[in-house]
Length: 429
Image (cartoon, rainbow, N blue to C red; front, side, top):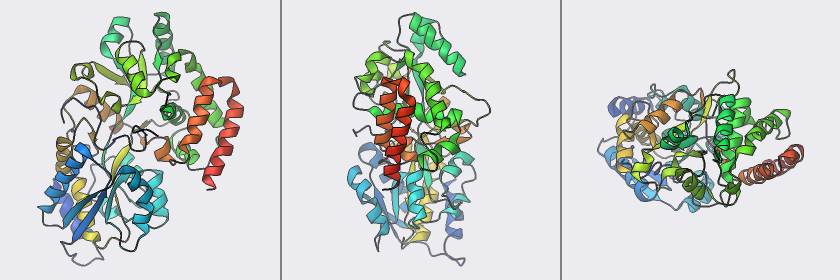
């Protein structure tokens, strides 16, 4: 995939670029006193953080490490590796005899898979000092055995983005329900505006956001995770219901959107050539400040009010090796990373607008960001993105199935049967 592959998409360092930047004591002390085997833990010790973050994101992590080293709870060093090398070498790092202690990566199925192999450090005691964090993030950090194995640093959100000035010009309002969404689409279409932007060109993964959201709105986040873990079937009637609902929106998609990538779909949205675009905050990475200030978004419409609301919020942070030679210092660093102080510093020393995971940490002073943060804080559950909740190997099966559906929606049954067949090959290895 491209540099905008959803598995990495510059998530820790970038969000809405061009618009400025994003208690440690009690958390750190609680962690240090609870680490170890029950006696008085030793402080100090060297910790190696293996990171794939470069550019401004690297600067943010360097500041995090420097600030931690001043606390006297350990000495941390940073080793930066190119993302693709990091990705392919991560299993080797974790299974080696003398692995790095700590890693930048993300939560979800990837972390859980490593934890099932007993490769990740149990950091449940760190979470004992993270009482301000919402249950949605605790759930995301918890493996199948009930242990917390991940500490979140920041995330971002997905939604239907639009220009406020265009909605005002067209005399329309953001919808809350699917029925209102359909009405909005019909209104825009009647005005000659393609209602929904889509950029499938060489970024077909964009379509996965539609599948993810429709599935969590109709069938709920637990079913969605089970489906992506191979515990449910893609040819299940529940999945067909997702495509049946999606088919209602297809007449409102920009017909040109299948030919160009999401970057060009973003340009079309900003130019008023489409009405709205289901995309992550990275759509504004290279957008001028005055245009960003005209951006707004609305939550993916509610379809079934009985289904607990989940939101797509790819979350980045840290997990640690179960074979860390310095678990006390490693947990002390994780506890510091989870603090308000550390996360606000990270955002200030990184670039763009990203949401700190700590609910009390300040993000960029901007209404759009406050709205995004509130939406995620109010969610019952957080999902990640198709490949994060499944695997990089399963993503191409989604790309094939979803783009084929958009082209030939009358072939839903055949598409789902083929998708299940392809998914089984991935799950069986």
